[in-house]
Amino acid sequence: MGFALSNIQLKSSAFENYSLLPSKYSNEAEDLSPALSWENPPADTKGYAIICYDPDAPIVTPNGTYGFVHWVLYNIPADVTELTEATDKFTQGTNNYGNTGYNGPLPPEGHGLHHYYFWVLALDNETDLKPGLTLWELLKIIEPNLLGMNRLIGTYQR
Image: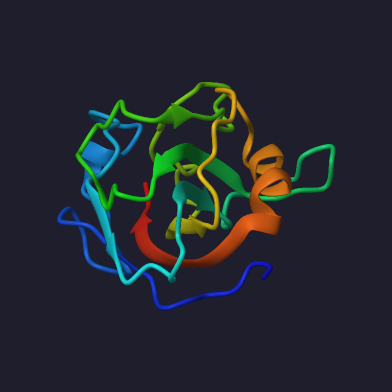
């Protein structure tokens, strides 16, 4: 299928789409992952992955990617449709801080408003991938199994 939006809907009780993320979800404060939930997955969904990515970050990596990855979470079974705040469930990948798990926004001071794309990706198979994958490693593996995806965007600035 490739990477295309679908009817799956991603929501958070912590913030509305295109609204400010409360500071407790930032790297300036408690650095908690926000609660997320989703509905209307594509038929035949067998698993999910979650990503949080900041395309506004002024970073280009040696392999030519840009932006900043804040969270990579995968091996989420099909019967799961929500994540609690500060979840420690499922398999955590490596973010651009060099850590596994969630690390929230910390844009450069004075750099303006950044957009944090929380993505839910619905897959046609249940995954059992090793911990610590980067976003780019994960996407390379799951792209052939992607049924649909959608995003929820939070904003933050310092």
